Amino acid sequence: MNIVVLASHQLRHRYFINHLNTHFSLSAIMIEKFLYPPPYSFSK
Image (tube, rainbow, N blue to C red; front, side):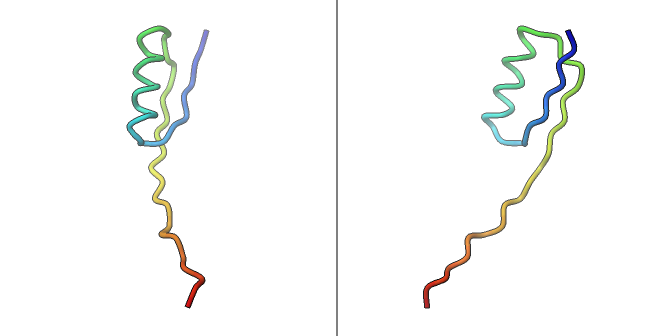
């Protein structure tokens, strides 16, 4: 079985990847670092 994981760099995703890796052989892990924009305020 080939497992490819696509995840972000967040701690919960790294935990999930480590947990998967202890039970299965992972073929590839792709980490996407995404910076969310700050929230905009519409009030004056």
